[in-house]
Length: 192
Image 1 (tube, rainbow, N blue to C red):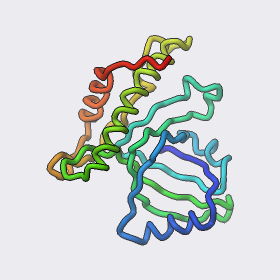
Image 2 (cartoon, helix red, strand yellow; image 1 turned 90 degrees about the vertical axis):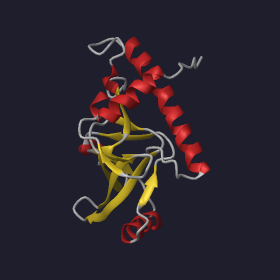
Image 3 (cartoon, one colour; image 1 turned 120 degrees about the horizontal axis):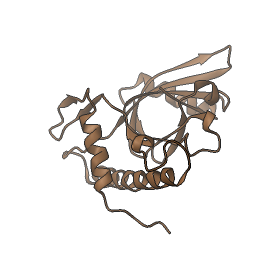
Image 4 (cartoon, helix red, strand yellow; image 1 turned 30 degrees about the vertical axis):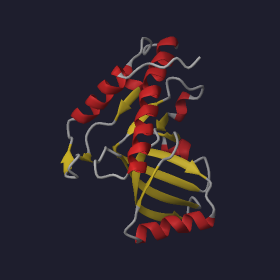
């Protein structure tokens, strides 16, 4: 589970409530989004706590690179889709909790051209981030020095839609491993 504290207006909270009731409960992260594996830390921020169940999503563990490793920061990559599972108000904490399930968008040949372009952008952004994170990790002293790929990973297990649109299970993380391998083989970009 991941958590994210945020300040949302009453109108935006009401939109999440409406989305739970509608058939269109899906959205996606349009940018890199910070979250935490530490619920208590995330609860310190904002009037809303997002509770993120990770079904299958590109994330990067930043805790080893952070000045605040106790925050257990996990970066969610752009293009990760989510479904809105519920919204509830906790009167004790005076905070709304919004429950999301994260699932990375796997290519679908039936997708419209804009969606295919966006998915391509997200794959490129992830392919750039993984080597950069490995490079930063290699430069940082400590037990994980040397480009340990554990900080750049895709969660194991879950479901995805194949090119025909059929729902498939990936209980062993084979697809995740393949995605990581492809990202490692992607061209390296010099960001200087």
